[in-house]
Image 1 (cartoon, rainbow, N blue to C red):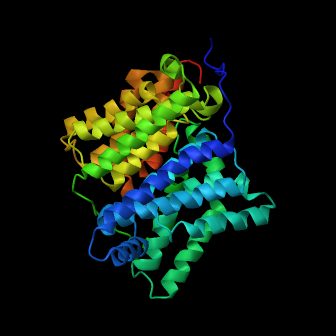
Image 2: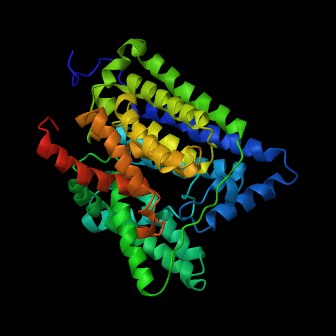
Image 3: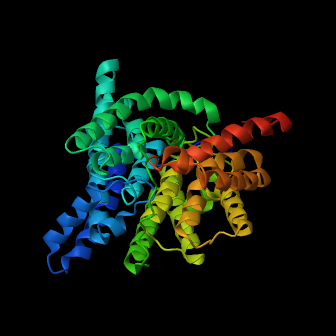
Length: 427
């Protein structure tokens, strides 16, 4: 049986896939409200927390678990999750691997930079782009979901006292709309730079936009300074919730395809280069099983090294879970992660720090390099990734949430042509 031969299984309707995914925002909403319910003034606590999250400049690193509290952070993520699922249903999108990746990524980053205020102007900009080009919104909704990586620009301009109110608020919204308008054509061009070896293509595009915006602001003597606001408590409730949700995905995989455990090995030969949609190639059964497995493995790694499961870490884990539907599996992720860990160890970084943990998790954006060129090159790519990602944030001032996607694009653009020059192989 060849890699490209799809497994015959019961074809899920898009409504059924949406019902599977809606469990996540429902669980987040219940967990968030439950975390607030037994406090002295639950309504006030929730509204204050959501206000703190929505009005905070959200440059890297701004952890909403710390800014607004655990309950408000989970409610914020739930609201954004419901909003995006509504759009997918409204525009009758067929839920493929990349849409699942987009949904999970946005859900994760709703703990870490994206809120109910700063994402909306980008969607409006995407709508205006569709009207201008006379195309349907469903044609760009995927790119717009990912492009919310630029949401901190809106919050920074609106609330960081760069401009006096209400001018800062109005300018922030206008800039967000402009980003949504230009991101679609830019992203298609940027894909050529890394040739599909960087799964977070919008992260690379956003890095370019962020660099331009930050440079313009700096020319007017306006500095955007990264912050380091982190939730530093180990919340056992969050860990238990994540375990339950990842086991849920594994169970869904088993229900869809009863032979999934035996057939799971069929995912491992895939190199992961865009476009590798596991829902199309292997079916939803193996896809959901892989998502749950990658989620548990990612969480296990965090706990083994002694890391805190906070907002940025949740974002890293959920991005891996999402892209486990579109290119990532244990075989092509492990070498990249190992390269980052080895580099961090020899440089002397604390392996349990949030910064290193999310670098390891997000580095899997270049998993296709390991999938294509093997474990040795994958480890080298991971080493290069750490060197770049720990230094490149200053270029865009932390206003691109997908900083690892920016670094990954540069690693792929640098390393892949060299490998192709010395090693002829299928790409």
